[in-house]
Amino acid sequence: MLDQRFVRQNPEAVRQAAANKNERVDVDRFLDLDERRRELLQTVESLKQRRNTVSDEIARMKRDGEDASERIAEMREVSTRIKGIDADLAGLQDSLQAILERLPNIPHPTVPVGADESANVEVRHWGDTPEVEFERKAHWDIGEALDIIDFQRAGKISGSHFVLFKGEGARLQRALIQFMLDLHIRKHGYTEIIPPYIVNRQSMFGTGQLPKMEEDMYRTDMDDLFLIPTAEVPVTNMHRDEILPEDDLPIRYTAYSPCFRREAGSYGRETRGLIRVHQFDKVEMVKFVRPETSYDELETLVNDAEEVLQLLNIPYRVVALCTGELSFAAAKCYDLEAWAPGVNRWLEVSSCSNFEDFQARRSGIRYRDKAGKSRFVHTLNGSGMGMARTLIAVIEHYQTVRGSIRIPEVLVPYMGGLKEIG
RNA sequence: GGUGGGGUGUCUGAGUGGCCGAAAGAGACGGUCUUGAAAACCGUUGUACCUUUGCGGGUACCGUGGGUUCGAAUCCCACCCCCACCGCCA
Image (cartoon, rainbow, N blue to C red; front, side):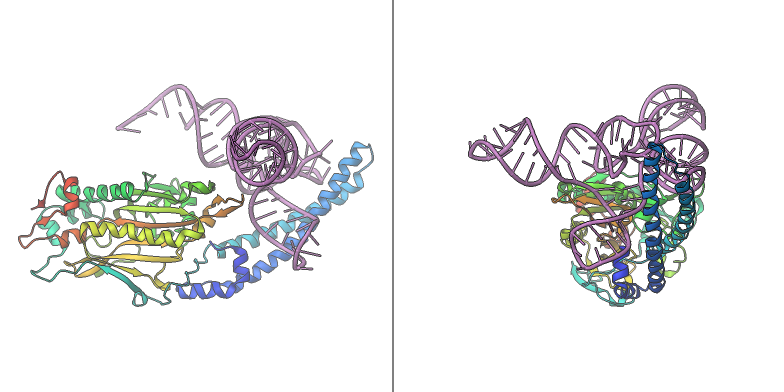
Protein backbone atom coordinates (compact mmCIF):
# COMPACT_ATOMS: atom_id res chain seq x y z
CA MET A 1 0.00 0.00 0.00
CA LEU A 2 1.15 3.49 -0.73
CA ASP A 3 1.20 6.23 1.85
CA GLN A 4 -1.93 8.34 1.59
CA ARG A 5 0.04 11.55 1.86
CA PHE A 6 2.47 10.40 -0.79
CA VAL A 7 -0.41 9.85 -3.19
CA ARG A 8 -1.80 13.29 -2.40
CA GLN A 9 1.53 14.96 -2.99
CA ASN A 10 2.67 12.91 -5.98
CA PRO A 11 -0.44 12.08 -7.97
CA GLU A 12 1.45 12.18 -11.25
CA ALA A 13 4.02 9.63 -10.08
CA VAL A 14 1.22 7.33 -8.97
CA ARG A 15 -0.62 7.68 -12.27
CA GLN A 16 2.55 7.06 -14.23
CA ALA A 17 3.50 4.02 -12.18
CA ALA A 18 0.07 2.49 -12.62
CA ALA A 19 0.10 3.17 -16.35
CA ASN A 20 3.52 1.54 -16.66
CA LYS A 21 2.20 -1.47 -14.77
CA ASN A 22 -0.83 -1.71 -17.06
CA GLU A 23 -3.13 -0.95 -14.16
CA ARG A 24 -6.09 1.34 -14.30
CA VAL A 25 -6.46 3.63 -11.30
CA ASP A 26 -8.60 6.63 -10.55
CA VAL A 27 -6.24 9.08 -8.90
CA ASP A 28 -8.52 12.04 -9.59
CA ARG A 29 -11.32 10.49 -7.63
CA PHE A 30 -8.89 9.78 -4.84
CA LEU A 31 -7.76 13.40 -4.73
CA ASP A 32 -11.33 14.63 -4.75
CA LEU A 33 -12.42 12.32 -1.91
CA ASP A 34 -9.27 13.10 0.00
CA GLU A 35 -9.92 16.81 -0.13
CA ARG A 36 -13.52 16.40 1.00
CA ARG A 37 -12.35 14.18 3.80
CA ARG A 38 -9.93 16.76 5.09
CA GLU A 39 -12.58 19.47 5.03
CA LEU A 40 -15.01 17.35 7.02
CA LEU A 41 -12.25 16.29 9.35
CA GLN A 42 -11.46 19.86 10.26
CA THR A 43 -15.10 20.61 10.92
CA VAL A 44 -15.70 17.60 13.09
CA GLU A 45 -12.45 17.92 14.97
CA SER A 46 -13.19 21.46 16.02
CA LEU A 47 -16.63 20.30 17.18
CA LYS A 48 -14.97 17.58 19.20
CA GLN A 49 -12.61 20.07 20.69
CA ARG A 50 -15.60 22.11 21.77
CA ARG A 51 -17.24 19.06 23.26
CA ASN A 52 -14.14 18.09 25.18
CA THR A 53 -13.74 21.57 26.61
CA VAL A 54 -17.35 21.87 27.70
CA SER A 55 -17.39 18.34 29.10
CA ASP A 56 -14.54 19.29 31.37
CA GLU A 57 -16.48 22.36 32.34
CA ILE A 58 -19.54 20.26 33.15
CA ALA A 59 -17.43 17.99 35.30
CA ARG A 60 -16.10 21.00 37.16
CA MET A 61 -19.56 22.52 37.63
CA LYS A 62 -20.95 19.26 38.98
CA ARG A 63 -18.12 19.01 41.43
CA ASP A 64 -18.85 22.52 42.57
CA GLY A 65 -22.54 21.74 42.81
CA GLU A 66 -23.56 24.13 40.05
CA ASP A 67 -26.36 23.56 37.56
CA ALA A 68 -24.96 22.32 34.25
CA SER A 69 -28.18 21.40 32.50
CA GLU A 70 -27.89 24.20 29.96
CA ARG A 71 -24.43 23.06 28.90
CA ILE A 72 -25.55 19.48 28.74
CA ALA A 73 -28.41 20.39 26.46
CA GLU A 74 -26.04 22.30 24.19
CA MET A 75 -23.62 19.40 24.04
CA ARG A 76 -26.39 17.00 23.26
CA GLU A 77 -26.88 18.90 20.03
CA VAL A 78 -23.17 19.08 19.28
CA SER A 79 -22.85 15.37 19.79
CA THR A 80 -25.65 14.70 17.34
CA ARG A 81 -23.90 16.78 14.71
CA ILE A 82 -20.63 15.01 15.39
CA LYS A 83 -22.27 11.65 14.96
CA GLY A 84 -23.67 12.68 11.58
CA ILE A 85 -20.39 14.03 10.25
CA ASP A 86 -18.48 11.04 11.59
CA ALA A 87 -20.76 8.78 9.59
CA ASP A 88 -20.11 10.75 6.40
CA LEU A 89 -16.43 10.67 7.16
CA ALA A 90 -16.44 6.93 7.61
CA GLY A 91 -18.06 6.55 4.21
CA LEU A 92 -15.37 8.71 2.63
CA GLN A 93 -12.63 6.78 4.39
CA ASP A 94 -13.98 3.50 3.07
CA SER A 95 -14.03 4.80 -0.48
CA LEU A 96 -10.52 6.19 -0.11
CA GLN A 97 -9.27 2.98 1.40
CA ALA A 98 -10.78 0.96 -1.42
CA ILE A 99 -8.86 3.04 -3.96
CA LEU A 100 -5.69 3.14 -1.91
CA GLU A 101 -5.43 -0.60 -1.42
CA ARG A 102 -5.74 -1.09 -5.17
CA LEU A 103 -2.96 1.31 -6.10
CA PRO A 104 0.06 -0.71 -7.25
CA ASN A 105 3.53 -0.17 -5.89
CA ILE A 106 5.78 2.29 -7.69
CA PRO A 107 8.51 0.61 -9.77
CA HIS A 108 12.09 1.40 -8.89
CA PRO A 109 13.77 3.85 -11.33
CA THR A 110 16.08 1.10 -12.58
CA VAL A 111 13.17 -1.01 -13.78
CA PRO A 112 12.90 -0.98 -17.59
CA VAL A 113 9.66 0.61 -18.76
CA GLY A 114 7.57 -1.58 -21.03
CA ALA A 115 4.24 -3.26 -21.45
CA ASP A 116 5.10 -6.93 -21.86
CA GLU A 117 7.88 -9.48 -21.72
CA SER A 118 9.50 -8.16 -24.89
CA ALA A 119 10.68 -5.24 -22.74
CA ASN A 120 12.31 -7.47 -20.12
CA VAL A 121 16.07 -7.22 -19.99
CA GLU A 122 18.40 -10.20 -19.71
CA VAL A 123 20.90 -9.27 -17.03
CA ARG A 124 23.20 -12.29 -17.32
CA HIS A 125 23.14 -15.93 -18.12
CA TRP A 126 24.99 -18.93 -16.78
CA GLY A 127 25.91 -22.22 -18.39
CA ASP A 128 25.67 -23.24 -21.99
CA THR A 129 22.54 -24.60 -23.52
CA PRO A 130 23.81 -28.00 -24.65
CA GLU A 131 24.13 -28.91 -28.28
CA VAL A 132 21.37 -31.13 -29.53
CA GLU A 133 23.22 -34.42 -29.65
CA PHE A 134 19.96 -36.35 -29.67
CA GLU A 135 16.24 -35.68 -29.88
CA ARG A 136 15.24 -34.44 -26.44
CA LYS A 137 11.91 -35.64 -25.17
CA ALA A 138 9.50 -33.51 -23.16
CA HIS A 139 9.19 -34.26 -19.45
CA TRP A 140 5.66 -35.59 -19.76
CA ASP A 141 6.81 -38.30 -22.17
CA ILE A 142 9.81 -39.22 -20.03
CA GLY A 143 7.74 -39.11 -16.85
CA GLU A 144 5.12 -41.46 -18.19
CA ALA A 145 7.62 -43.81 -19.80
CA LEU A 146 9.47 -44.19 -16.51
CA ASP A 147 6.22 -44.31 -14.53
CA ILE A 148 7.28 -41.51 -12.20
CA ILE A 149 4.69 -38.87 -13.15
CA ASP A 150 0.99 -39.67 -13.51
CA PHE A 151 -1.21 -36.97 -14.99
CA GLN A 152 -4.08 -39.33 -15.77
CA ARG A 153 -4.73 -40.40 -12.25
CA ALA A 154 -4.15 -36.94 -10.84
CA GLY A 155 -6.88 -35.79 -13.18
CA LYS A 156 -9.18 -38.52 -11.96
CA ILE A 157 -8.52 -37.71 -8.33
CA SER A 158 -8.63 -33.93 -8.53
CA GLY A 159 -9.06 -32.56 -12.03
CA SER A 160 -6.90 -31.32 -14.84
CA HIS A 161 -3.69 -29.49 -14.08
CA PHE A 162 -3.02 -31.55 -11.03
CA VAL A 163 -0.13 -33.95 -10.93
CA LEU A 164 0.92 -37.04 -9.07
CA PHE A 165 4.52 -38.11 -8.57
CA LYS A 166 5.33 -41.73 -8.02
CA GLY A 167 8.30 -43.80 -6.87
CA GLU A 168 11.64 -42.27 -7.86
CA GLY A 169 9.79 -39.26 -9.24
CA ALA A 170 8.36 -38.45 -5.84
CA ARG A 171 11.72 -39.06 -4.28
CA LEU A 172 13.48 -36.81 -6.77
CA GLN A 173 11.14 -34.00 -5.93
CA ARG A 174 11.68 -34.51 -2.23
CA ALA A 175 15.43 -34.59 -2.81
CA LEU A 176 15.28 -31.26 -4.60
CA ILE A 177 13.37 -29.68 -1.72
CA GLN A 178 15.76 -31.08 0.84
CA PHE A 179 18.80 -29.98 -1.11
CA MET A 180 17.52 -26.43 -1.53
CA LEU A 181 16.56 -26.05 2.12
CA ASP A 182 19.92 -27.32 3.28
CA LEU A 183 21.74 -24.93 0.97
CA HIS A 184 19.82 -21.90 2.19
CA ILE A 185 20.02 -22.88 5.82
CA ARG A 186 23.65 -23.97 6.01
CA LYS A 187 25.35 -21.82 3.45
CA HIS A 188 23.17 -18.75 3.05
CA GLY A 189 22.16 -18.23 6.66
CA TYR A 190 18.38 -18.51 6.45
CA THR A 191 16.22 -19.82 9.27
CA GLU A 192 13.87 -22.62 8.32
CA ILE A 193 10.15 -22.16 8.84
CA ILE A 194 7.28 -24.56 8.43
CA PRO A 195 4.31 -22.22 8.30
CA PRO A 196 0.57 -22.86 8.19
CA TYR A 197 -0.57 -23.58 4.66
CA ILE A 198 -3.99 -22.05 5.21
CA VAL A 199 -4.21 -18.40 6.19
CA ASN A 200 -6.79 -15.81 7.03
CA ARG A 201 -7.98 -12.92 4.92
CA GLN A 202 -5.83 -10.37 6.69
CA SER A 203 -2.66 -12.26 5.86
CA MET A 204 -3.63 -12.43 2.21
CA PHE A 205 -4.23 -8.71 2.28
CA GLY A 206 -0.92 -8.02 3.97
CA THR A 207 1.20 -9.42 1.18
CA GLY A 208 -1.02 -7.95 -1.53
CA GLN A 209 -2.85 -10.99 -2.95
CA LEU A 210 -6.11 -9.45 -1.83
CA PRO A 211 -8.25 -7.73 -2.81
CA LYS A 212 -7.20 -7.92 -6.44
CA MET A 213 -6.38 -11.61 -6.90
CA GLU A 214 -9.14 -13.24 -4.93
CA GLU A 215 -10.48 -15.24 -7.88
CA ASP A 216 -7.05 -16.87 -8.30
CA MET A 217 -7.04 -18.24 -4.77
CA TYR A 218 -8.54 -21.36 -3.27
CA ARG A 219 -10.77 -20.39 -0.41
CA THR A 220 -12.58 -22.34 2.28
CA ASP A 221 -16.11 -21.01 2.43
CA MET A 222 -17.04 -21.98 5.94
CA ASP A 223 -14.12 -20.31 7.66
CA ASP A 224 -13.13 -17.74 5.05
CA LEU A 225 -9.57 -19.04 4.96
CA PHE A 226 -7.27 -19.28 1.97
CA LEU A 227 -4.90 -21.97 0.74
CA ILE A 228 -1.59 -20.23 0.35
CA PRO A 229 -0.42 -19.47 -3.20
CA THR A 230 3.15 -19.22 -1.85
CA ALA A 231 4.92 -19.47 1.51
CA GLU A 232 5.60 -15.76 1.12
CA VAL A 233 2.15 -15.14 2.59
CA PRO A 234 2.41 -16.89 5.96
CA VAL A 235 6.13 -16.16 6.39
CA THR A 236 5.88 -12.44 5.64
CA ASN A 237 2.88 -12.22 7.93
CA MET A 238 4.82 -13.73 10.81
CA HIS A 239 5.82 -10.22 11.80
CA ARG A 240 2.58 -8.47 10.92
CA ASP A 241 1.79 -5.70 13.41
CA GLU A 242 5.15 -6.05 15.10
CA ILE A 243 7.93 -3.61 15.84
CA LEU A 244 11.25 -5.39 15.45
CA PRO A 245 14.47 -4.36 17.19
CA GLU A 246 16.88 -2.94 14.62
CA ASP A 247 19.55 -5.41 15.73
CA ASP A 248 17.35 -8.28 14.58
CA LEU A 249 17.59 -7.09 10.98
CA PRO A 250 18.10 -8.45 8.46
CA ILE A 251 15.82 -11.39 9.16
CA ARG A 252 16.09 -14.20 6.62
CA TYR A 253 13.63 -17.08 6.51
CA THR A 254 13.31 -20.00 4.16
CA ALA A 255 10.28 -22.23 4.00
CA TYR A 256 9.13 -25.20 2.02
CA SER A 257 5.42 -25.31 1.28
CA PRO A 258 2.98 -26.58 -1.26
CA CYS A 259 1.43 -23.73 -3.25
CA PHE A 260 -2.16 -23.63 -4.44
CA ARG A 261 -3.29 -21.55 -7.37
CA ARG A 262 -6.56 -21.61 -9.25
CA GLU A 263 -4.90 -20.07 -12.30
CA ALA A 264 -8.29 -18.90 -13.48
CA GLY A 265 -8.33 -18.38 -17.21
CA SER A 266 -4.78 -19.38 -18.00
CA TYR A 267 -5.28 -22.64 -19.86
CA GLY A 268 -3.88 -23.48 -23.26
CA ARG A 269 -0.94 -24.94 -25.04
CA GLU A 270 1.52 -23.06 -22.86
CA THR A 271 0.40 -24.88 -19.76
CA ARG A 272 0.90 -28.48 -20.71
CA GLY A 273 2.47 -31.01 -18.36
CA LEU A 274 4.10 -29.63 -15.27
CA ILE A 275 4.49 -26.08 -16.51
CA ARG A 276 1.37 -24.70 -14.90
CA VAL A 277 -0.38 -26.75 -12.22
CA HIS A 278 -2.81 -25.97 -9.42
CA GLN A 279 -0.60 -27.40 -6.72
CA PHE A 280 3.16 -27.35 -6.68
CA ASP A 281 5.94 -27.40 -4.14
CA LYS A 282 8.24 -24.48 -3.57
CA VAL A 283 11.09 -23.45 -1.34
CA GLU A 284 10.73 -19.78 -0.62
CA MET A 285 13.09 -17.19 0.85
CA VAL A 286 11.78 -14.15 2.70
CA LYS A 287 13.74 -11.20 4.08
CA PHE A 288 12.94 -8.32 6.40
CA VAL A 289 15.58 -5.63 6.05
CA ARG A 290 16.44 -2.00 6.75
CA PRO A 291 15.35 0.23 3.85
CA GLU A 292 18.91 1.37 3.15
CA THR A 293 20.02 -2.17 2.41
CA SER A 294 17.07 -3.58 0.51
CA TYR A 295 18.53 -3.35 -2.99
CA ASP A 296 21.77 -4.98 -1.90
CA GLU A 297 19.68 -7.66 -0.24
CA LEU A 298 17.79 -8.15 -3.49
CA GLU A 299 21.04 -8.90 -5.31
CA THR A 300 22.17 -11.45 -2.73
CA LEU A 301 18.71 -12.98 -2.77
CA VAL A 302 19.03 -13.52 -6.50
CA ASN A 303 22.51 -14.94 -6.02
CA ASP A 304 21.22 -17.35 -3.39
CA ALA A 305 18.60 -18.59 -5.82
CA GLU A 306 21.08 -18.79 -8.69
CA GLU A 307 23.37 -21.00 -6.70
CA VAL A 308 20.69 -23.68 -6.64
CA LEU A 309 20.73 -23.88 -10.42
CA GLN A 310 24.50 -23.65 -10.59
CA LEU A 311 24.91 -26.59 -8.24
CA LEU A 312 22.36 -28.52 -10.27
CA ASN A 313 24.35 -27.49 -13.30
CA ILE A 314 21.34 -26.25 -15.21
CA PRO A 315 21.78 -23.34 -17.63
CA TYR A 316 19.71 -20.31 -16.78
CA ARG A 317 19.36 -16.62 -17.37
CA VAL A 318 18.51 -13.76 -15.06
CA VAL A 319 15.87 -11.41 -16.39
CA ALA A 320 14.97 -7.99 -15.01
CA LEU A 321 11.23 -7.65 -15.39
CA CYS A 322 9.90 -4.53 -17.07
CA THR A 323 7.22 -2.40 -15.42
CA GLY A 324 4.35 -4.12 -17.23
CA GLU A 325 5.46 -7.54 -15.97
CA LEU A 326 5.98 -6.51 -12.37
CA SER A 327 3.48 -7.80 -9.89
CA PHE A 328 1.13 -5.47 -8.08
CA ALA A 329 3.20 -5.23 -4.91
CA ALA A 330 6.73 -5.35 -6.33
CA ALA A 331 9.05 -2.41 -6.86
CA LYS A 332 11.62 -4.49 -8.67
CA CYS A 333 11.85 -8.11 -9.68
CA TYR A 334 14.29 -10.53 -11.26
CA ASP A 335 13.13 -13.79 -12.76
CA LEU A 336 15.38 -16.80 -13.04
CA GLU A 337 14.65 -18.83 -16.14
CA ALA A 338 16.02 -22.32 -16.49
CA TRP A 339 16.57 -23.87 -19.87
CA ALA A 340 14.34 -26.86 -20.51
CA PRO A 341 15.63 -28.62 -23.62
CA GLY A 342 12.69 -31.02 -23.96
CA VAL A 343 10.00 -28.37 -24.30
CA ASN A 344 12.66 -26.18 -25.84
CA ARG A 345 12.07 -23.03 -23.86
CA TRP A 346 13.07 -20.98 -20.85
CA LEU A 347 11.00 -21.69 -17.77
CA GLU A 348 10.48 -19.26 -14.95
CA VAL A 349 11.67 -21.18 -11.90
CA SER A 350 12.24 -18.29 -9.54
CA SER A 351 11.03 -14.78 -9.00
CA CYS A 352 12.93 -12.49 -6.64
CA SER A 353 11.31 -9.22 -5.65
CA ASN A 354 11.85 -6.19 -3.51
CA PHE A 355 8.57 -4.81 -2.22
CA GLU A 356 10.21 -1.93 -0.39
CA ASP A 357 7.72 -0.79 2.28
CA PHE A 358 4.60 -1.71 0.29
CA GLN A 359 3.85 -4.94 2.11
CA ALA A 360 5.21 -3.60 5.37
CA ARG A 361 2.77 -0.69 5.31
CA ARG A 362 -0.13 -3.02 4.51
CA SER A 363 0.75 -5.35 7.32
CA GLY A 364 2.29 -3.01 9.86
CA ILE A 365 5.79 -4.48 9.94
CA ARG A 366 8.16 -1.95 11.46
CA TYR A 367 11.43 -1.71 13.28
CA ARG A 368 12.74 0.71 15.84
CA ASP A 369 15.86 2.52 14.67
CA LYS A 370 18.75 3.68 16.79
CA ALA A 371 17.10 7.04 17.35
CA GLY A 372 14.05 5.27 18.79
CA LYS A 373 11.86 6.04 15.80
CA SER A 374 9.72 3.28 14.34
CA ARG A 375 9.96 2.85 10.58
CA PHE A 376 8.60 0.39 8.08
CA VAL A 377 10.95 -2.41 7.10
CA HIS A 378 11.50 -3.42 3.51
CA THR A 379 10.38 -6.92 2.61
CA LEU A 380 11.76 -9.14 -0.12
CA ASN A 381 11.13 -12.63 -1.24
CA GLY A 382 12.25 -15.05 -3.87
CA SER A 383 11.71 -18.61 -4.82
CA GLY A 384 14.61 -20.82 -4.22
CA MET A 385 13.16 -22.51 -6.28
CA GLY A 386 9.73 -23.47 -7.55
CA MET A 387 9.35 -27.18 -7.93
CA ALA A 388 7.63 -28.88 -10.82
CA ARG A 389 9.34 -26.49 -13.18
CA THR A 390 12.74 -27.09 -11.63
CA LEU A 391 11.94 -30.77 -11.88
CA ILE A 392 11.16 -30.29 -15.57
CA ALA A 393 14.52 -28.70 -16.09
CA VAL A 394 16.27 -31.52 -14.26
CA ILE A 395 14.41 -34.29 -16.06
CA GLU A 396 14.81 -32.81 -19.51
CA HIS A 397 18.38 -31.72 -18.94
CA TYR A 398 19.61 -34.98 -17.43
CA GLN A 399 17.78 -37.36 -19.78
CA THR A 400 19.89 -39.86 -21.67
CA VAL A 401 19.61 -41.32 -25.15
CA ARG A 402 18.40 -44.54 -23.55
CA GLY A 403 15.45 -42.70 -22.01
CA SER A 404 16.69 -42.73 -18.42
CA ILE A 405 17.41 -39.78 -16.14
CA ARG A 406 20.79 -39.30 -14.52
CA ILE A 407 20.67 -37.87 -11.01
CA PRO A 408 22.52 -34.56 -10.59
CA GLU A 409 25.56 -35.10 -8.43
CA VAL A 410 24.41 -32.84 -5.59
CA LEU A 411 21.16 -34.79 -5.32
CA VAL A 412 22.70 -38.27 -5.18
CA PRO A 413 23.08 -38.21 -1.37
CA TYR A 414 19.44 -37.16 -1.09
CA MET A 415 18.48 -40.08 -3.36
CA GLY A 416 20.10 -42.62 -1.11
CA GLY A 417 23.00 -43.02 -3.50
CA LEU A 418 20.84 -43.59 -6.55
CA LYS A 419 22.61 -42.28 -9.68
CA GLU A 420 20.05 -42.91 -12.37
CA ILE A 421 16.32 -43.45 -12.82
CA GLY A 422 15.26 -45.96 -15.44
C1' G B 1 -17.76 -28.16 20.88
C1' G B 2 -18.33 -26.92 26.62
C1' U B 3 -16.77 -24.13 31.04
C1' G B 4 -13.72 -20.50 33.24
C1' G B 5 -9.97 -16.57 32.88
C1' G B 6 -7.91 -12.80 29.86
C1' G B 7 -6.61 -9.07 25.56
C1' U B 8 -3.93 -1.73 28.10
C1' G B 9 2.07 1.73 25.28
C1' U B 10 8.61 -1.45 23.05
C1' C B 11 7.82 -5.21 27.23
C1' U B 12 5.66 -6.55 32.26
C1' G B 13 1.57 -4.60 34.52
C1' A B 14 -2.12 -1.01 37.46
C1' G B 15 -6.48 1.29 36.40
C1' U B 16 -14.84 0.03 37.20
C1' G B 17 -17.73 7.04 34.31
C1' G B 18 -14.83 13.27 34.29
C1' C B 19 -8.57 15.34 37.61
C1' C B 20 -6.40 9.00 32.31
C1' G B 21 -2.60 9.24 26.60
C1' A B 22 -3.10 6.41 30.80
C1' A B 23 0.29 4.58 37.60
C1' A B 24 4.54 1.64 38.61
C1' G B 25 8.56 -1.21 36.94
C1' A B 26 11.70 -2.86 32.89
C1' G B 27 14.07 -1.54 28.40
C1' A B 28 16.10 2.33 25.27
C1' C B 29 18.35 7.22 24.85
C1' G B 30 20.87 11.61 27.21
C1' G B 31 23.43 13.34 31.59
C1' U B 32 26.14 13.16 36.63
C1' C B 33 29.79 10.03 38.94
C1' U B 34 34.11 6.73 37.03
C1' U B 35 40.73 5.86 33.93
C1' G B 36 36.77 2.87 31.39
C1' A B 37 32.60 -0.09 32.51
C1' A B 38 28.96 -1.68 36.04
C1' A B 39 26.03 0.14 40.04
C1' A B 40 23.60 4.47 41.83
C1' C B 41 21.18 9.08 40.84
C1' C B 42 18.70 12.89 37.47
C1' G B 43 16.13 13.66 32.91
C1' U B 44 13.85 12.08 28.19
C1' U B 45 11.07 8.30 25.81
C1' G B 46 3.85 5.78 22.00
C1' U B 47 1.33 5.86 17.13
C1' A B 48 -1.63 7.89 13.31
C1' C B 49 -4.09 11.86 11.22
C1' C B 50 -5.55 17.24 10.44
C1' U B 51 -3.60 22.16 10.63
C1' U B 52 0.67 25.82 10.64
C1' U B 53 6.24 28.84 6.44
C1' G B 54 7.91 27.85 11.52
C1' C B 55 7.08 27.83 16.90
C1' G B 56 2.88 25.56 17.86
C1' G B 57 -2.39 24.04 17.97
C1' G B 58 -5.99 20.09 17.51
C1' U B 59 -8.34 15.11 16.98
C1' A B 60 -8.28 9.97 17.51
C1' C B 61 -6.31 5.47 19.44
C1' C B 62 -6.49 0.84 25.98
C1' G B 63 -8.41 -6.62 20.85
C1' U B 64 -12.40 -5.26 16.63
C1' G B 65 -17.18 -3.16 15.50
C1' G B 66 -21.61 -1.07 17.38
C1' G B 67 -24.48 1.18 21.57
C1' U B 68 -25.60 4.13 26.24
C1' U B 69 -23.92 9.15 28.08
C1' C B 70 -22.88 16.13 28.05
C1' G B 71 -18.49 12.87 28.81
C1' A B 72 -16.17 5.76 28.08
C1' A B 73 -9.86 2.12 28.90
C1' U B 74 -13.90 1.95 32.58
C1' C B 75 -21.08 0.49 31.53
C1' C B 76 -24.10 -2.57 27.58
C1' C B 77 -24.24 -5.77 22.93
C1' A B 78 -21.90 -8.59 19.05
C1' C B 79 -17.58 -10.56 17.08
C1' C B 80 -12.25 -11.99 16.93
C1' C B 81 -8.01 -13.80 19.34
C1' C B 82 -5.09 -15.91 23.51
C1' C B 83 -4.63 -19.08 28.02
C1' A B 84 -6.40 -23.14 31.34
C1' C B 85 -9.43 -27.36 32.12
C1' C B 86 -13.06 -30.89 30.02
C1' G B 87 -14.84 -33.49 25.55
C1' C B 88 -13.40 -35.22 20.65
C1' C B 89 -9.26 -36.55 17.65
C1' A B 90 -4.32 -37.53 13.54
